Amino acid sequence: MNISRRQLLAMTGATATLAATLKAQAAAKASAATGLKEAYKDDFLIGAALSATIIKQQDPKLMALVNKEFNSITPENCMKWGELYNENGSWKWQDADAFVEFGSKHNLHMVGHTLGWHSQIPDSVFKNQDGNYISKAELEKKQKAHITTIVERYKGKLAAWDVVNEAVGDDNKMRDSHWYKIMGDDFLVNAFNLAHEVDPKAHLMYNDYNNERPEKRQATIDMIKRLQQRGTPIHGLGMQAHIGLQTNLQDFEDSILAYSALGLKIHLTELDIDVLPSVWNLPVAEISTRFEYKPERDPYTKGLPKKVETKLAKAYESLFKILIKHRDKVDRVTFWGVSDDASWLNDFPIKGRTNYPLLFDRQHAPKPAYFRLMDLKR
Image 1 (cartoon, rainbow, N blue to C red):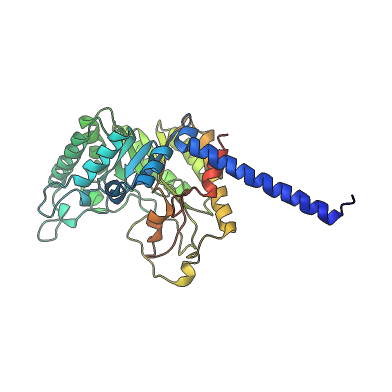
Image 2 (tube, rainbow, N blue to C red):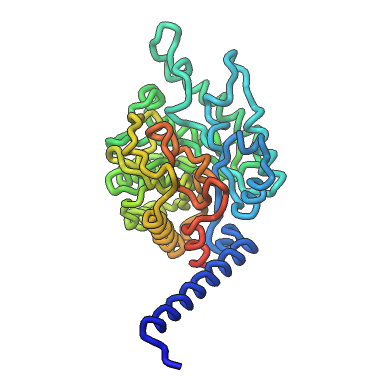
């Protein structure tokens, strides 16, 4: 029987396709049996941010996914200042309590987010009825009441806190927030001291975006050194890791080394990878940033092209290779959300776009990026 070169190539191609299909099926089966948290159990915690909606709805399939893949959870919004108070000033605990109850029920590591931030907090915290700033002593009193109350409520349940969030601005100087205008560095020092006094066992972190970039990294290091010189109990450094396909990942390795040299444990706290066209010098995570919707800024409404999907998978793989290399310095990697359908990047910084930044798609199925990360541990 004579076989032509064309027939031989076709047979070889078919065999390769079959082999690739079988490999993909084997990978899917293996991941179904393990999950990310099991694959990375000797490296670091694998976390996800959960919205109050997810906690309330308790969708069985989504809950099963969360329990299989993640061993740490962070609340998206329900522990922020603006979410914890009723209009009359009384505490509003329902969503935060539900988050803690869920984590306790499923024996998950829980991170509180966040005790001090310039966003999602009313101006009335800082200003009197005339619109003028209150005194430093008055703000310190409010800060103490807030932090001691919430930390005491969840003492022994939350393993860690994002104590202060985003205190360094995009100009690589201390953010000119209401907190900082009134209290200066005491805003941060007091926050960490208060949390530590109430719960000495809690792991306390400073958290920020873009702090892997060299200039902001240095500004952050300078700030942390000032805090450490005052004996501030800061234990960990959170890099939010809201990044894009073009992000220089070498910056992450350099930052892991630089921050750990200060004696801090490293956390990636809000990881996602934006695949949509950049509007300006994104990624950035200042939530007040907004741009106009235009169709050309939302090109993947019918699905992510395979070429871009491959780039996303490669970006996740490259980042995780760095994290695995420095597993002795990295405590946790938390994704900002579970699946693409609920990602904040569908509406930030342009409302209504269709983004694909996470490891699970809109049907909660694992994406190629997920299998790349599983393959790293086989």
